[in-house]
Length: 260
Image 1 (cartoon, helix red, strand yellow):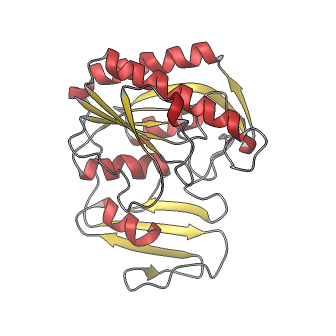
Image 2: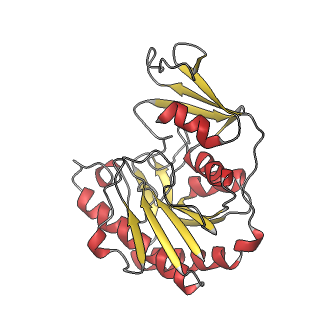
């Protein structure tokens, strides 16, 4: 059984602000270590629950954050940002885990809340419903028939994920107190919880179905600054800050038109 872990950084246990997730941040090297530790707890849970193959994809920023030399040797790692697929090498996976995720842009007291880019994007909608990275990524995996079985992050992310995809197992490792503040579990308790929730998710994997959406799907993005919408034939301009694209048969098709 193959399990795919897409790892972001903002929702990792022990991370409480921007200095942990930016390459020039004072706590970035510690942030990389914390990220790798959360992943190792998840990988441990995967194999404990019966996985035979685990792929970890480094999905934060440039995709070069996970400490390769400290990663559980049973897992294989995808790093870099030169690929066009949102989930490279995901084919054949029984389930997807979105680890270290965060709430969508504008979430009150969500730790490091944003939607792909805090500097550029104000809001994102799919078929008129506001979504964050969790929702979009869960639907891109659903394009391929792969269920999103578990996600970890702060309480705001867990609430968002449960509303969007009620079957997903959520793992709350901290409570957001603001964009740059959180109340956090200890490292030991957080890693134990990630392992436990991973095992629970895999044990329930046959009962967790991919979330559904209607096609063709319309993905709309509202930028923060005016005049920054892309000039492409595949993109419809709504106004000076907003644009959208249509995916005829997949969410990933619309996503690529807007983000790739």
